[in-house]
Length: 255
Ligand SMILES: Nc1nc2c([nH]c(=O)n2[C@H]2C[C@H](O)[C@@H](COP(=O)(O)OP(=O)(O)OP(=O)(O)O)O2)c(=O)[nH]1
Figure: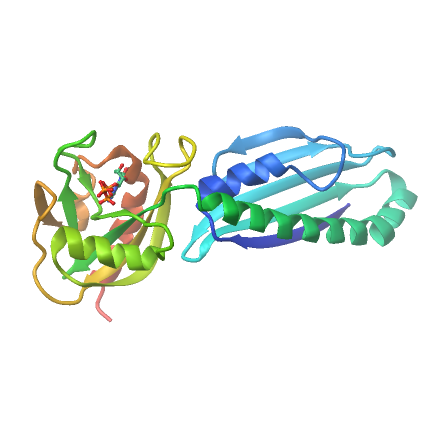
C-alpha cells in the first residue's frame, strides 16, 4: 500500500470548494464509488481504477481558514501482490502525483472563478471586557432573531473591508478585525449563485472607538459566555457559538 497527500488552498467558500471538487471528479478515467459525503466537509470515494485488482481510496477534507478553504486530500492505494506493489510504487506513484497536481491547479482556478458568482456574508464577533455584542434583526425573514452584525460582501471588495464597512454602516463605529472564527452555511438563497452556496464567515473584532448604536437593528446587547446558548440566534449561526464561547473565555483569562 502507498499513500499520497495533497493540500490546496482555494479562495472560495466551503460550499463552492466542495461542489466544484465533486463536479470535477478525479484525474483518472474509472469512476469511484462514494463512501462518505458530508457537504461541505468531507468526501470519500473508493474503487478499483484500471486492471490488476488495485484498490484506491480518495478522501478530501474541506476546512475554513482566514484565507479561504483548505482542501486536504489523501490517496491510499492498495496494490495487487508484491510485484504489483513494487511496480505501483516505482511507476504509478509518480504518475498519479503529476496528474493530481495538474488536476488540483485546474480545480483551484475553477473554484475561485465559481466563487465570484456566489454572494458572501461576513460577520463580526465584537468583544469587549469578556462580552460579545449581538444584534437583533429588524424585519425580513429573520425578524427578531439574534445575529453577528455584518452583511454582504460587494463585488470586488475584500471580506475584511466589507466587514469594517458593514459595521460602520450598521453600528456607526470603527472596528479592528482580529482572528478568523469560522464559516457556516446559510439557509437558501442569500442572493446570487445557486441555492445553498452562500456562507457566513465570522471574525473576532475589537471596537476601535465610539459606542455602537443600532442604526438598522431592533436592539444591540452585550452578552457573557454563559448567556450565548439562550439567545434566539438565526439557526445557521448556532454552530459558531462554541467558537465564540471559547473566544470570550480566552479574553477573560488573565495574561
Ligand atoms: N449579518 C449577518 N447576516 C446573517 C447572519 N446569519 C445569517 O443567516 N445571515 C443572513 C441574513 C441575510 O440573508 C444575509 C445578510 O444580509 P444583510 O441584510 O445583513 O446584508 P446587507 O446589510 O449587505 O443587506 P442589504 O443592504 O443588501 O439588504 O445573511 C449573521 O449572523 N449576520
